[in-house]
Image 1 (tube, helix red, strand yellow):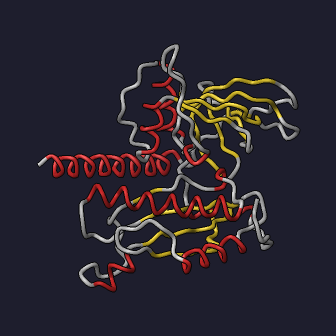
Image 2 (cartoon, helix red, strand yellow):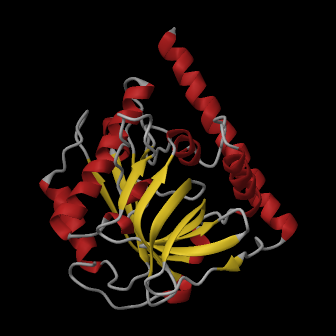
Image 3 (cartoon, rainbow, N blue to C red):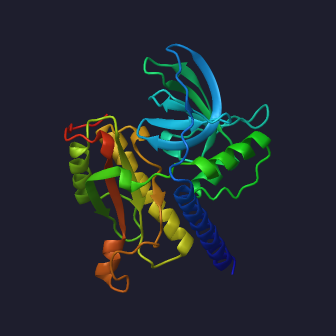
Length: 296
């Protein structure tokens, strides 16, 4: 009974998330384009500490809007530290990689300006509650304990630029498959990922989407966990074996058995559904035909 209740609760959260996402998309149609904020130009070498909400992310940069509706382009580097805020005197923050930086996340960035007017991030911190709110597809159902955070969430509802595939060209798609109850990459899967990495764009404007799935046999929540492990295995392989920076990879997500591509009542269909889909996308406005064997 407990498992059934958790399953129903999860579906309610997803349903609420979808409703809110649709609402934001249609609000964009009502108001036309999302209103641009004032652009902040950070002087080279200038120290800056700014709190805001992520409006959009594109590879190694994201746009951060603060309460004054000023937009700052934040640059991520290999040395950028990303943690949750400290809790108390003896409890340090939990470390995250750059895939945690999803649109809608409220955070604080400390860093210095670079030669292009961007804020080169040294440290990024955020609250656990704000992270949970952001990764549930902009549902923002968690209560906040800070008026400034509430104002930023309100701004996110009104001004957030939803990542839209219409703005991107899909330059490469790879699907890798897994054995029953396994999240280990096969030799065939590794070969497919090797080919994808070899053809990944060398430009600064690409990103990688990773989505994990299972067949519908077994427990609902365990399938979600397994699909996430499969997505994480792909990300680890691309990062370790091909040097693709995590800042290029959108938050890897496991969807369980929610998106079937074949008849799940047959063994052959189940094999097709036990998969991870990997897409390399390039911004249409900055698309390039060049490629490198190991994209940085």
